[in-house]
Image (cartoon, rainbow, N blue to C red; front, side, top):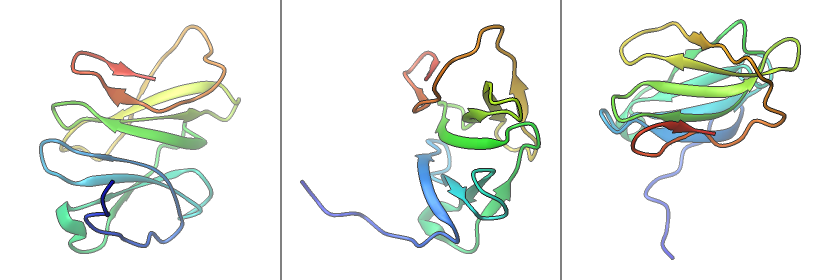
Length: 120
């Protein structure tokens, strides 16, 4: 057991978060920042200054996020038709790239780097 290193109040309801291993920035899926479940806020290391916010118009509801070893951010959730979807925000960019799936995954879950693959 221990105590938090730091705490920070988000503008909306923080749902999930991930730490970029290359920069120590923290990405947070925030509900009701500009809508509900549709934004991700990226805070600089040690929460210096306001976050940069990102939105993917095809991803209606963001739920979980995770970084890979190269600092690429992945977010999962649901599109406008309620189908599971993953989007990638490549390191150093400002636009999401949608990753297509031929099969629907019934429930979004944590998305994490396992050392080789992004896992849901």
